[in-house]
Length: 91
Image (cartoon, rainbow, N blue to C red; front, side, top):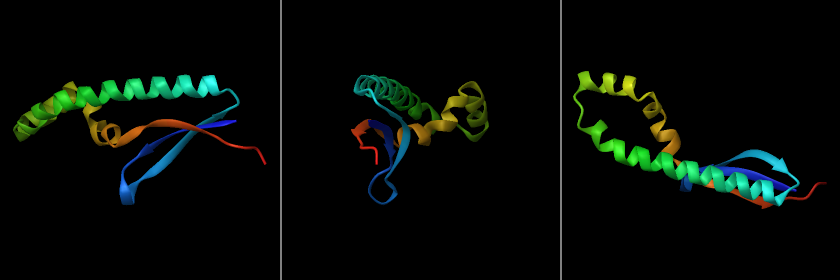
């Protein structure tokens, strides 16, 4: 059996979030690969967009977030380290 999970934070605020358990290593590997590929794309998007956010005036800030509501998730996405899986045993 394989436990698929992702981690967030570093040092003192590091924690892991379990997602699911599967008996197939192939399913676990495919999910982890897909998760990390999508995460990489989102982080790239946020890196490209962040300079625009910093340079905004307070009036334009709300309009920018209305145009890109996903930016409310900036810190949630950028703190994710990535997904991984590990073999576990049933008791």
